[in-house]
Amino acid sequence: MTNLLEKTLLTALGAATLSQKKAEEFVQELRHKFNVTEEEGKALLGKVQDMARQNQERLEKLAHEEIAKACERMGVVTQEEFDKLKKKVAQLEKKLKEAKS
Image (cartoon, rainbow, N blue to C red; front, side, top):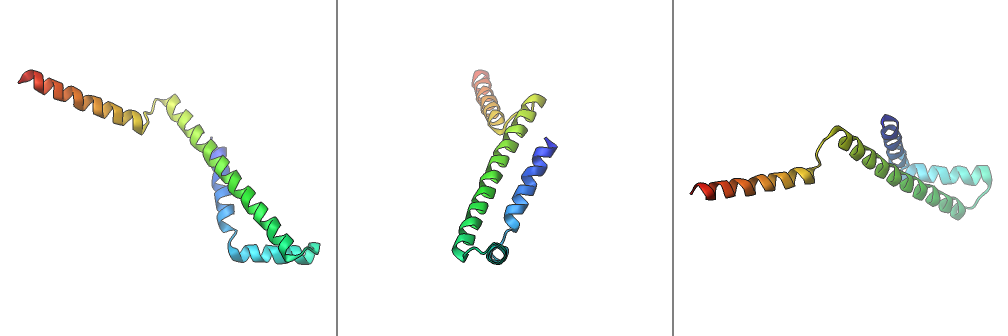
């Protein structure tokens, strides 16, 4: 699970560091090294950024799923389960007070 979290963080950092300036530098490098037009470079950059975003979303989803599974294996209750139990206790307390009256 640590490996998955590490990959998620690295992907998030990688996507975040690809700033506008870096993107422009990347397009310029493509133009010079591979003789592509600016439009082609921007299109390729857009595809790369979309793929990075999609991969980040997939990794985040996987990380959430793995964490949920780990919590379930360890017996950790979810917030939803806790809230249901809290509501049930409040209802039982109310019934108990009414029965004493």
